[in-house]
Length: 179
Image 1 (tube, helix red, strand yellow):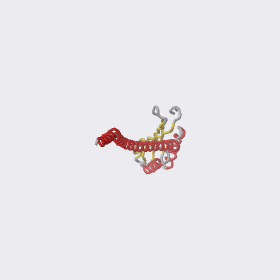
Image 2: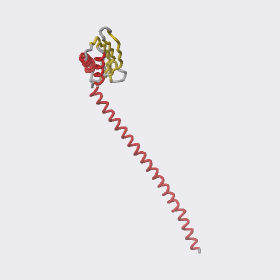
Image 3: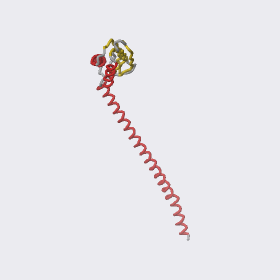
Image 4: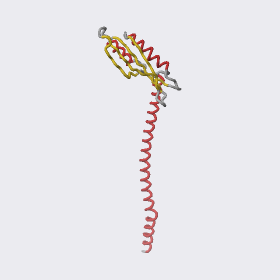
C-alpha cells in the first residue's frame, strides 16, 4: 500500500509539476498562435490596402503627368496659340466678328500652374454662336469657359453680342512675368 501511495503521490506530483504547467503553456501557446494568425491576416489585409493605395496614387500621378504633358499647353506661347489663334479661326469659320479680346496671366503662390485668362467679345448670328460654343466645348484643347454673357447687339440686323471669359492653364518651370 505504501508503494501505491508513493506512486499516486509521484503521479500527482508529476501531473501538478510537469503535465499541468505544460498543458497550460500549450493552451496559452495555441491562443497566442491564434492571435498572431489573426494579426498576420489583418497585417496582410492592411498591406494589400496600402499596396492598392500606392498603386492608385502612382496611376493618378501618371495620369496627372500625362494631363500636364499631353493636354495642357506646355508654355505661355502654346497657351496663347490655342486661345488667340485657334479661337479667332473658329470664330471666323462660324461667321462671328471678334470685336476685341484681352488677356492676363496669374499664378497662385506655390503653384507651378499658371492660368491664362482671356475675354472675347464676339458679334454675329445666334446659331453661329451656338456652333462656335459647341466646337469650343468639344475641342481637344484644354479651354475652360469661366463666364458667358449673351445680349442683343443690333435688333435691326438681328445680331447678338457674346462675351466669353475663357481660361487655360500651362505648366511653369520658372517664374514668368505676366504679359
